[in-house]
Image: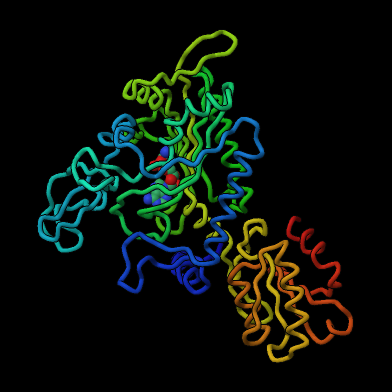
Length: 438
Ligand code: GAP
C-alpha cells in the first residue's frame, strides 16, 4: 500500500473513475449519495471476486449448495426475521434542515451541518419500501432485501427435499442487498445497494464454537489469497449491546482502512436457530431437520459468514495501489494478484498506421481473447500505453513490432518487474497461462 495514507483514498477514487473501475452514480444529474456504477474494469474485477468466492466456498467443497433467491419477497419474511422491528438505526434529526445523523456523529446538541436544533434519538428502519401490484396499500408492501440471508432460510426445506443433505452443510448465495444508509462517504465502503456473498452453515448446536472457529480460518485464508497483507487484518468480537437482533455471538474481520483505521470488512455471526424457528412459527411450515440415523427432529443452528463484495473490491484496490519511481520515471501501478486482475493481457501494435503490424497484432489479440481477458490499444506511444495498463493492473503487455514480422516473436512486458522478453507467437498462450498461474 502507498505510504501516504492521507491522500490514498482520493487517489484511488480518481484512478477508479479515470480507468473505468467505478463511476459516481447518476453523475450527470449531480449524483445520488452513496451510489456508484461499475465501469468495464470494475465489472471484470467484481466478477473475478465473486467467481473466486464461489469456487472457494461452494464448488471446491462437498458440503455446500448454491442458491439465487429473489430480491423481492413476501413482507411476512421480514416480520418473521425480526427486521421490521429489530433492524433499526437510532438517529437524530435536525429540526431545521431535516437531515438525519447517527447519534455518534453528533456529540453536540446542534446539527453538524446547519447548527439547527436536534430531535431526541428516534428509531428508523433502513429498509427500502416499495409496493407490488397496482394498489399502494399495506398489504402490497414489499421491501428490497437488506440481506441475502433470508432467501436461504425460506428455501431451507426445498434444498433438504431436493438434495437430502446431512449436517453439517451450507447454503450459499451472492446478490444485491439494499440499505437506506444515512452515513455518507468513504467511496464504495458503504453503499445504498451493494452485493453480499453469504453462507448459512447449518450445524448441531453443540458444535457451534468449533465450527465458528473453523470459519474464522476459512475466511482469513480466502482474504489472504486475494493478496491482502496480514498486518491489515484483525478480528473483533461484538459487545453484547452491539449484537444484531438475531445474533448470539458475532465477530467482525476488520481491515485497516485509510479512513479511521480498523473497520468491519465482513461479519461472522452465530444466529443459533433464530431464523428457522421464527419462519417455522410464522409460516406454519415445519422447517425442522430430521436426523436420518436417530430420526430426531430439531432446528439446526447456523453459523453465518457474510462478505461484502464492494469492501472486498476496495481492499484489493488499496493493497494493489503502488506509486514507484524507476530510473527517474514515475508510475502508478495496481499490483493485482493476476487471478483477480480485470484484464490479463494487453496487445499493442508498435505503430497504429502500419497495416502489416496491425494485421499481425490483431490476429494475436483475437487468438488470445479465446483464452484470456485481453484488451487492444493502439493509441499514443508505447510508453503511454504501458502507463495506462499499469494503472489498470494488467499483468502482461504484448508489443508487435517490425521484428515480429520477420521472426514471429513478440515482446512481453511484465507489469511488476517491467522486464521485457521475446516469446515466439506459437508459444505465447502457454507462456502466459503459466505466468498468470505462478
Ligand atoms: N446477513 C448478515 C448481514 O447482513 P452485516 O454485517 O449487516 O451482516 C454483511 O453485512 C457484510 O455486508 C458487511 O460485513 C459488509 O461487508 C457488507 N455491507 C453491509 N452494509 C453495507 C453497505 N451499506 N455497503 C457496502 N457493503 C455493506
